[in-house]
Image (cartoon, rainbow, N blue to C red; front, side, top):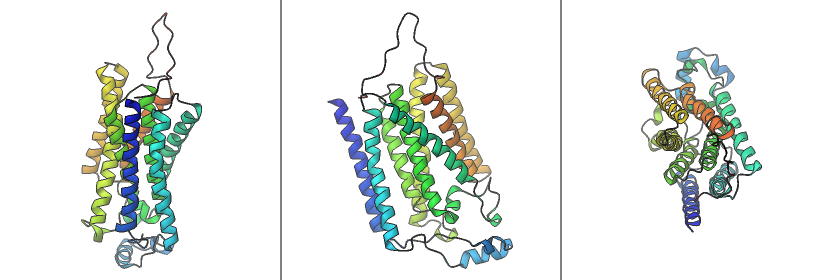
Length: 306
Protein backbone atom coordinates (compact mmCIF):
# COMPACT_ATOMS: atom_id res chain seq x y z
CA UNK A 1 0.00 0.00 0.00
CA UNK A 2 2.84 2.38 0.87
CA UNK A 3 4.55 1.63 -2.43
CA UNK A 4 1.40 2.40 -4.38
CA UNK A 5 0.86 5.60 -2.40
CA UNK A 6 4.38 6.91 -3.15
CA UNK A 7 4.06 5.97 -6.80
CA UNK A 8 0.83 7.99 -6.94
CA UNK A 9 2.59 10.94 -5.26
CA UNK A 10 5.43 10.92 -7.80
CA UNK A 11 3.02 10.46 -10.70
CA UNK A 12 0.91 13.36 -9.45
CA UNK A 13 4.00 15.53 -9.09
CA UNK A 14 5.10 14.95 -12.68
CA UNK A 15 1.56 15.36 -14.00
CA UNK A 16 1.36 18.75 -12.24
CA UNK A 17 4.78 19.73 -13.63
CA UNK A 18 3.81 18.76 -17.18
CA UNK A 19 0.48 20.61 -17.02
CA UNK A 20 2.11 23.74 -15.55
CA UNK A 21 4.80 23.68 -18.24
CA UNK A 22 2.25 23.19 -21.02
CA UNK A 23 0.13 26.09 -19.76
CA UNK A 24 3.20 28.31 -19.38
CA UNK A 25 4.25 27.60 -22.96
CA UNK A 26 0.71 28.11 -24.26
CA UNK A 27 -0.14 31.28 -22.33
CA UNK A 28 3.00 33.12 -21.22
CA UNK A 29 5.12 32.24 -24.25
CA UNK A 30 3.86 32.76 -27.79
CA UNK A 31 4.89 30.88 -30.89
CA UNK A 32 6.73 33.97 -32.15
CA UNK A 33 8.43 34.49 -28.78
CA UNK A 34 11.49 36.70 -28.39
CA UNK A 35 13.56 35.43 -31.32
CA UNK A 36 17.01 33.94 -31.21
CA UNK A 37 20.02 35.86 -32.52
CA UNK A 38 21.77 34.05 -35.35
CA UNK A 39 24.87 35.91 -36.60
CA UNK A 40 25.83 35.23 -40.18
CA UNK A 41 29.25 34.02 -41.31
CA UNK A 42 30.06 37.56 -42.43
CA UNK A 43 29.13 38.92 -39.00
CA UNK A 44 31.73 36.68 -37.38
CA UNK A 45 34.50 38.35 -39.42
CA UNK A 46 33.67 41.90 -38.33
CA UNK A 47 35.91 43.80 -35.89
CA UNK A 48 34.69 43.61 -32.30
CA UNK A 49 33.28 47.17 -32.22
CA UNK A 50 31.34 46.74 -35.46
CA UNK A 51 30.06 43.33 -34.46
CA UNK A 52 28.77 44.58 -31.08
CA UNK A 53 27.14 47.60 -32.74
CA UNK A 54 25.40 45.40 -35.28
CA UNK A 55 24.57 42.80 -32.65
CA UNK A 56 22.71 45.37 -30.56
CA UNK A 57 20.64 46.59 -33.47
CA UNK A 58 20.57 43.69 -35.88
CA UNK A 59 17.43 42.05 -37.17
CA UNK A 60 16.54 38.93 -35.27
CA UNK A 61 15.72 35.66 -36.98
CA UNK A 62 12.88 33.78 -35.21
CA UNK A 63 13.51 30.22 -34.12
CA UNK A 64 10.01 29.07 -35.06
CA UNK A 65 9.11 29.82 -38.71
CA UNK A 66 5.42 29.32 -37.97
CA UNK A 67 2.98 28.35 -35.24
CA UNK A 68 2.95 24.68 -36.29
CA UNK A 69 6.64 24.20 -35.48
CA UNK A 70 6.20 25.88 -32.11
CA UNK A 71 3.18 23.79 -31.11
CA UNK A 72 4.88 20.57 -32.20
CA UNK A 73 7.73 21.42 -29.83
CA UNK A 74 5.29 22.28 -27.02
CA UNK A 75 3.39 19.00 -27.44
CA UNK A 76 6.55 16.88 -27.69
CA UNK A 77 8.27 18.45 -24.67
CA UNK A 78 5.12 18.32 -22.54
CA UNK A 79 4.57 14.65 -23.43
CA UNK A 80 8.18 13.92 -22.49
CA UNK A 81 7.64 15.46 -19.05
CA UNK A 82 4.67 13.12 -18.49
CA UNK A 83 7.02 10.21 -19.33
CA UNK A 84 9.24 10.98 -16.32
CA UNK A 85 6.57 9.44 -14.08
CA UNK A 86 6.77 6.28 -16.17
CA UNK A 87 10.54 6.24 -15.70
CA UNK A 88 10.06 6.31 -11.92
CA UNK A 89 7.72 3.34 -12.20
CA UNK A 90 10.13 1.38 -14.42
CA UNK A 91 13.27 2.11 -12.40
CA UNK A 92 12.18 2.51 -8.77
CA UNK A 93 9.03 0.43 -8.58
CA UNK A 94 9.48 -2.44 -11.05
CA UNK A 95 9.98 -5.85 -9.48
CA UNK A 96 13.47 -6.20 -10.95
CA UNK A 97 15.97 -4.03 -12.78
CA UNK A 98 15.86 -5.51 -16.26
CA UNK A 99 18.68 -5.51 -18.78
CA UNK A 100 16.64 -3.12 -20.92
CA UNK A 101 16.40 -0.57 -18.08
CA UNK A 102 20.11 -0.90 -17.36
CA UNK A 103 20.98 -0.45 -21.04
CA UNK A 104 18.67 2.58 -21.30
CA UNK A 105 20.28 4.25 -18.29
CA UNK A 106 23.88 3.66 -19.31
CA UNK A 107 23.23 4.72 -22.92
CA UNK A 108 21.57 8.00 -22.00
CA UNK A 109 24.28 8.65 -19.36
CA UNK A 110 27.01 8.30 -21.99
CA UNK A 111 24.97 10.22 -24.58
CA UNK A 112 24.28 13.06 -22.13
CA UNK A 113 27.92 13.38 -21.14
CA UNK A 114 29.12 13.25 -24.74
CA UNK A 115 26.59 15.80 -25.98
CA UNK A 116 27.09 18.44 -23.28
CA UNK A 117 30.85 18.15 -23.80
CA UNK A 118 30.56 18.55 -27.57
CA UNK A 119 28.02 21.36 -27.22
CA UNK A 120 30.15 23.28 -24.72
CA UNK A 121 33.03 23.54 -27.19
CA UNK A 122 31.05 24.58 -30.26
CA UNK A 123 32.46 27.51 -32.21
CA UNK A 124 31.10 30.98 -31.57
CA UNK A 125 32.11 34.48 -32.71
CA UNK A 126 35.40 35.45 -31.07
CA UNK A 127 33.94 38.86 -30.28
CA UNK A 128 32.09 37.25 -27.36
CA UNK A 129 35.38 36.31 -25.69
CA UNK A 130 37.24 33.18 -24.73
CA UNK A 131 35.11 30.06 -25.08
CA UNK A 132 36.62 28.61 -21.89
CA UNK A 133 35.80 31.63 -19.72
CA UNK A 134 33.12 33.75 -21.39
CA UNK A 135 30.72 31.75 -23.58
CA UNK A 136 27.90 30.05 -21.66
CA UNK A 137 25.69 27.18 -22.72
CA UNK A 138 22.84 29.67 -23.00
CA UNK A 139 24.85 32.05 -25.18
CA UNK A 140 25.63 29.12 -27.47
CA UNK A 141 21.86 28.65 -27.61
CA UNK A 142 21.62 31.97 -29.45
CA UNK A 143 23.62 30.47 -32.28
CA UNK A 144 22.44 26.87 -31.95
CA UNK A 145 18.89 27.06 -30.49
CA UNK A 146 17.79 23.48 -31.21
CA UNK A 147 21.07 22.10 -29.94
CA UNK A 148 20.44 24.06 -26.75
CA UNK A 149 17.05 22.41 -26.33
CA UNK A 150 18.60 18.99 -26.90
CA UNK A 151 21.32 19.88 -24.38
CA UNK A 152 18.65 20.52 -21.75
CA UNK A 153 16.63 17.39 -22.53
CA UNK A 154 19.65 15.06 -22.50
CA UNK A 155 21.14 16.61 -19.36
CA UNK A 156 17.81 16.33 -17.55
CA UNK A 157 17.01 12.81 -18.71
CA UNK A 158 20.47 11.37 -18.03
CA UNK A 159 20.80 12.84 -14.53
CA UNK A 160 17.24 11.89 -13.60
CA UNK A 161 17.30 8.27 -14.76
CA UNK A 162 20.75 7.53 -13.38
CA UNK A 163 20.03 9.10 -10.01
CA UNK A 164 16.97 6.85 -9.77
CA UNK A 165 19.05 3.87 -10.88
CA UNK A 166 21.59 4.67 -8.16
CA UNK A 167 18.81 4.74 -5.56
CA UNK A 168 17.32 1.46 -6.74
CA UNK A 169 20.62 -0.38 -7.04
CA UNK A 170 21.43 0.53 -3.41
CA UNK A 171 17.89 -0.06 -2.06
CA UNK A 172 17.65 3.59 -1.04
CA UNK A 173 14.12 4.88 -0.41
CA UNK A 174 14.75 8.60 0.01
CA UNK A 175 11.57 10.45 -0.90
CA UNK A 176 13.27 13.85 -0.57
CA UNK A 177 15.92 12.80 -3.07
CA UNK A 178 13.37 11.71 -5.67
CA UNK A 179 11.36 14.92 -5.26
CA UNK A 180 14.28 17.37 -5.47
CA UNK A 181 15.74 15.49 -8.44
CA UNK A 182 12.34 15.61 -10.16
CA UNK A 183 11.95 19.36 -9.61
CA UNK A 184 15.51 20.08 -10.69
CA UNK A 185 15.31 18.02 -13.86
CA UNK A 186 11.96 19.60 -14.75
CA UNK A 187 13.28 23.14 -14.32
CA UNK A 188 15.73 22.89 -17.22
CA UNK A 189 12.79 22.66 -19.64
CA UNK A 190 12.01 26.28 -18.80
CA UNK A 191 15.66 27.32 -19.12
CA UNK A 192 16.05 26.05 -22.68
CA UNK A 193 12.94 27.93 -23.81
CA UNK A 194 14.25 31.26 -22.50
CA UNK A 195 17.97 31.46 -23.31
CA UNK A 196 20.21 34.46 -22.76
CA UNK A 197 19.22 37.09 -25.30
CA UNK A 198 21.33 40.19 -24.74
CA UNK A 199 21.67 42.90 -22.12
CA UNK A 200 18.30 44.42 -23.02
CA UNK A 201 16.59 41.46 -21.33
CA UNK A 202 18.45 41.74 -18.02
CA UNK A 203 16.06 41.79 -15.03
CA UNK A 204 12.99 41.06 -17.14
CA UNK A 205 10.59 38.21 -16.23
CA UNK A 206 12.05 36.02 -18.97
CA UNK A 207 15.63 36.66 -17.91
CA UNK A 208 14.81 35.99 -14.26
CA UNK A 209 12.96 32.84 -15.29
CA UNK A 210 16.01 31.67 -17.21
CA UNK A 211 18.41 32.31 -14.34
CA UNK A 212 16.11 30.89 -11.67
CA UNK A 213 15.38 27.63 -13.46
CA UNK A 214 19.03 27.13 -14.45
CA UNK A 215 20.04 27.48 -10.78
CA UNK A 216 17.21 25.17 -9.69
CA UNK A 217 18.43 22.50 -12.12
CA UNK A 218 22.03 22.87 -10.95
CA UNK A 219 21.38 22.83 -7.22
CA UNK A 220 18.47 20.38 -7.00
CA UNK A 221 20.06 18.02 -9.51
CA UNK A 222 23.20 17.99 -7.38
CA UNK A 223 21.10 17.75 -4.20
CA UNK A 224 19.57 14.45 -5.32
CA UNK A 225 23.06 12.96 -5.56
CA UNK A 226 24.33 14.57 -2.35
CA UNK A 227 21.37 13.32 -0.31
CA UNK A 228 22.26 9.78 -1.32
CA UNK A 229 25.96 10.32 -0.63
CA UNK A 230 25.20 11.66 2.85
CA UNK A 231 23.07 8.57 3.50
CA UNK A 232 26.05 6.40 2.63
CA UNK A 233 28.41 8.53 4.74
CA UNK A 234 26.24 7.79 7.79
CA UNK A 235 27.07 4.13 7.23
CA UNK A 236 30.77 5.11 7.52
CA UNK A 237 31.58 3.82 4.06
CA UNK A 238 35.05 5.27 3.36
CA UNK A 239 34.71 5.21 -0.42
CA UNK A 240 31.46 7.16 -0.27
CA UNK A 241 32.94 9.63 2.22
CA UNK A 242 35.77 10.37 -0.21
CA UNK A 243 33.31 10.62 -3.12
CA UNK A 244 31.16 13.07 -1.13
CA UNK A 245 34.12 15.29 -0.28
CA UNK A 246 35.29 15.33 -3.90
CA UNK A 247 31.82 16.07 -5.31
CA UNK A 248 31.15 18.93 -2.88
CA UNK A 249 34.67 20.29 -3.46
CA UNK A 250 33.98 20.45 -7.22
CA UNK A 251 30.73 22.33 -6.59
CA UNK A 252 32.59 24.83 -4.40
CA UNK A 253 35.33 25.22 -7.02
CA UNK A 254 32.66 25.95 -9.63
CA UNK A 255 31.16 28.67 -7.41
CA UNK A 256 34.59 30.23 -6.88
CA UNK A 257 35.25 30.21 -10.62
CA UNK A 258 31.86 31.77 -11.33
CA UNK A 259 32.64 34.61 -8.92
CA UNK A 260 36.26 35.30 -9.84
CA UNK A 261 36.51 34.12 -13.46
CA UNK A 262 32.96 34.40 -14.80
CA UNK A 263 30.38 32.02 -16.15
CA UNK A 264 31.12 29.82 -19.14
CA UNK A 265 30.00 26.53 -20.64
CA UNK A 266 33.29 24.98 -19.51
CA UNK A 267 32.79 26.04 -15.88
CA UNK A 268 29.12 25.01 -16.01
CA UNK A 269 30.14 21.56 -17.23
CA UNK A 270 32.60 20.84 -14.41
CA UNK A 271 30.05 19.51 -11.88
CA UNK A 272 28.18 17.74 -14.68
CA UNK A 273 31.29 15.82 -15.72
CA UNK A 274 32.00 14.80 -12.13
CA UNK A 275 28.35 13.81 -11.59
CA UNK A 276 28.38 11.68 -14.74
CA UNK A 277 31.63 9.97 -13.72
CA UNK A 278 30.33 9.32 -10.20
CA UNK A 279 26.98 7.96 -11.40
CA UNK A 280 28.68 5.70 -13.93
CA UNK A 281 31.05 4.25 -11.32
CA UNK A 282 28.29 3.70 -8.75
CA UNK A 283 25.72 2.33 -11.19
CA UNK A 284 27.72 0.28 -13.65
CA UNK A 285 30.88 -0.85 -11.88
CA UNK A 286 31.51 -2.80 -8.69
CA UNK A 287 33.88 -0.19 -7.22
CA UNK A 288 31.43 0.95 -4.51
CA UNK A 289 29.74 -2.42 -4.03
CA UNK A 290 30.25 -4.11 -0.69
CA UNK A 291 31.74 -7.55 -0.92
CA UNK A 292 29.54 -10.26 0.62
CA UNK A 293 30.77 -11.65 3.89
CA UNK A 294 32.54 -14.98 3.65
CA UNK A 295 30.20 -17.96 3.90
CA UNK A 296 27.17 -15.89 2.89
CA UNK A 297 25.56 -15.71 -0.50
CA UNK A 298 24.55 -12.28 -1.70
CA UNK A 299 20.81 -12.16 -2.28
CA UNK A 300 19.53 -10.90 -5.57
CA UNK A 301 17.50 -7.70 -5.33
CA UNK A 302 13.98 -8.50 -6.52
CA UNK A 303 11.91 -6.42 -4.12
CA UNK A 304 10.32 -3.20 -5.38
CA UNK A 305 11.26 0.05 -3.66
CA UNK A 306 8.66 1.33 -1.28
